[in-house]
Length: 47
Image (cartoon, rainbow, N blue to C red):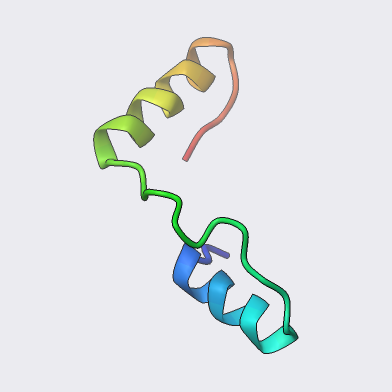
């Protein structure tokens, strides 16, 4: 299941808990792929 930051923020609000990552920037697709490659380089699966 892939839950984005906005959905998690909504869930936290529904629970009455402040969402600590509300203002965290969303990583670029290039950054995400670079990190996936780092995992793969160490023999791990990354999707």
